[in-house]
Structure formats: C-alpha cells, structure tokens
Image: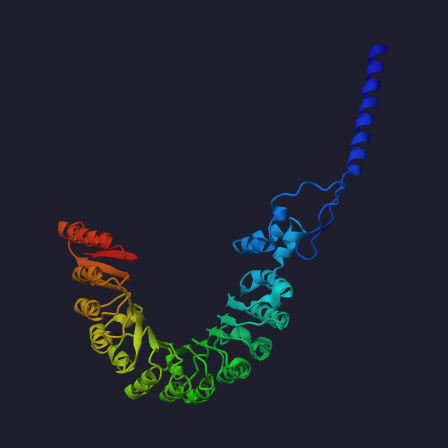
Amino acid sequence: MKRKIKNSDEAQETEKEEVQNNAEVKAKAPKRRRKFADLTIIDEPRLESKPESSYWDRLPYPIGVEICRYLNNSDRSSMSRVCRAWYNIFKDPSLWRKKQFLLGGPYSKVTSRKTLRFTTMFGSCLQEARIVCYHRTSNTCKIIYETMEKMMDNMTLSKLNRLDIKDLELDRFYWKYSSLRDKVTECLVKMFQLQNNLKHVRMELCQFTLTEGAAILNALLQSSGHNVCCLHLLDYFDSFFTLSDQEIFTSIISNFTNLKNLSLNYCYISNELLMNLSVVLKDKLKCLTIRASVIEDHYHVITPGTWKLLNASCPAVKVRLSLLRIADSETIIPMLAQGMPLSRFSMTSEMESAFDAHLSQTLTHLVHNFQLTLEEVNLHFNCLQDSVDNELISIVQQCRNLKTLRVMANAGVVVANAICTALKDRRQLRNVEFTVNEYSDDPNSERLRSVLRNIQDMLNEVRLVRDISVATIN
C-alpha cells in the first residue's frame, strides 16, 4: 500500500515539471504582431536566428505584381496577409486601375461600405471606373446618393480616362424624395469638373431632364471636351425629351471636337446635328450608334443629303441602327434613307407588334440600298406572319461584306440551305444564328430529318456557325 502511494506522488511531481517546462518554452518562442485595422497588415516574426530564405522571399517585386494580376480581390486580400513584402505588392497602384461598383440592391449598406473602403484606399489609383445601380427603392436611393457623394470625394486625386454610369433611372419616383435628383446632378457636375483627362464616357439609362443633362454635359465639355473620343448617351434623357429639345442638345454635342464613337437615341438626332458633326468631326468620326424605340419620338426623317454630307466628311464612319418594338415598314423605310453608311441593322419586336409588319418590304429595301455596306443583320421576332425566306436569301447572296447574321424569325429550310452554301463560298460570314422551321404533320418525318441532317453535315464541315435552333410546327 505504501508502495502505491509513493508511485502516485512521483507521477504528480513529474507532471508538474512537464507543465513548467512547456510554459518556459512558450515564453521563449517568438511572437507575431498582427494588425488588421488597415486591411491585413502582418509583421514578420522576430526570430533569434535568421532562417534560410525561401523561393518566395527571393521573388522579384515586378513578378509578384504580375502574379497578383491573375487573382481576384478576395485572393489578393488573402495574399497580403502573408508578409510585409506581399502586403506592399497588394498596395501597388497598377493593380487597382479598373473597378466596377455595384450600388443599391437588398444589401445596399454592405455594398456601400465596401465601395467606400475601396475608394479610401485606392481611389487615387483608379483610371477606369464603372458605376452600376440596381434595385432602386425609396430606401436604397438615398444610400446610393450618399455613397456616390463620398466616393467622388475619395476619387478627387484620381486621373480617370474612362467613366461608366449605368441604370440610375432618375425618372423613378423614388428619387423625388428629399430632392435626391438635384443632389445627384450636383454630385456628377462636381465630379466632371474635377476630371480633365476623360476619354471614354458612358451614361446609359440615367434619364435626366433636359436641364440636368445639359448641366452635366457642359461640365464634361469644359473639363475634358477636347479629350473625349467615345461618348455613349443611350437613354440619357427621360422619356419626356421632345424634338423641340434637340436645339439645346445639338449646341452642346457640336462642341465635342474629338469624338470617334458616338451613341445616341434616334430622338436626339436631327439634320442640324449631323451637319454640325460633319464639320466639327471631319475625318474623325468612326462609329455612330443609333437606337430608336416605340416609346420615343421616331417619326422625323433624316434627309439623304444630310447622310451623304456626313459620309463625305467622314469616309470611315459606320452607322449602327437598332429598332426596339418598331416593326412597321412604313415607319422604318423612311429611317433607312439613301446615303446612310449603314453597317449594322437590328430589329427586335414583341408579339403584338409583329403582326402585319410587312417585314419583307423592309428587308427588300435594306438589300437594295445597303448591300455594299451591311456587315451585320439581327432580326428577332416572337411572332411573324410574313414569309421572309426569299428576302433572307437575298441578304446572304447579295450583301458581300456580311459577317454576322442572326435570324430568330422561323426561317424556312430553303434559307438554311442557302446560308450553308454561302458559308462554303464566303469565309467572312463567320457568325450565323437562325431558327429552322418546317411545317409537317409528323415532326419525325423522314423528309425533315433528312434536311436537318444535311444542314448539320454542312455546318460541321464549315465549322463557323455559333448556334442553330431547330423548331418544328405541326
């Protein structure tokens, strides 16, 4: 009995000695000092003897920056926690030249904090910024404005050469509370006044009033009017913009003297504007994108003489015309005036506007007047009564510069055969999408299967078609 008690006492003393030894070892071990206040700064551990250098310690700074370019923001943040050298790479200004900011949404407060944190650290490094607003409500609109105001203050030292602002939609009634519309306009005017190096500006679906939009464009004109080469203003004004407002808009746009790419709604364009551009932008304008919508004024006509004047002044200009829910040939044909350097023609129509559209007349006029300039044709109809097989074949056969053809209007099998034949003869027609439609009582008929098999064989041989959609109507 005494022997057992003695052994237990010895075991307890041994455990106490081991605990004391472990405590002494931990006390002597080097400690790391971590600071997370400014996004993951971590100091190197203090070591009594310098360890052998690893490959990552010898990594040149430029190579570390290049590796960091392939990482997303989350991985970059994790990388910066490794050591002081990698944190310095993380803060390199060349890694933060481009950034997209999403404002609004169900987590608008979270996105606002992330945006302000980023612009506080890297706002002065930015050269290209894209601001996209979504899910605008009476609560989020105020947060969007406050975020934009603070982020613009953080970006005052930046030298932006590209700025995109999309989907503000200021005509929504949510922006009317607390005079938010006026405050957003003042914020953008102030921002454009401070930026004098802008070259690419895109403001789409902002829907300003004429007074608000003119003030912002004037601020842009005074600061960067001589530098701006790309200006995209689709849906820049609200739906109340009328033809009587074109004079003010024309006087502003005509002062941009270096434009190469210009995107406008059809209701913003007038004969006077195009004649002014032909003088101011001689040999400079390369692309003019025009979009017409059924909810806007689109019944005025640009005369053939105006188009010829623009084409003579800017020989390299290409016009891209898009029509939204406008299908009536009596409306479209006057828009397609002779002399227009049309390179891309797009039509998108919903079911109710596709009936009695007389699309065949529009396509016949298109081929007859623009067969030498057309490079892309897009047709998308959910419901169409006209048969346009012959017109589509004419487009493929006569438009020798055609590169892209997208037809979602239930084209016939004859059209599919003609397109496949054209693909063999003309290599520049590289992008074709169309819907094949065959009327048959039996969707699995041998004739239909044979036709589709022949088409697929030709497409596999050419291997230039992106997509084919095959539909069968009984």
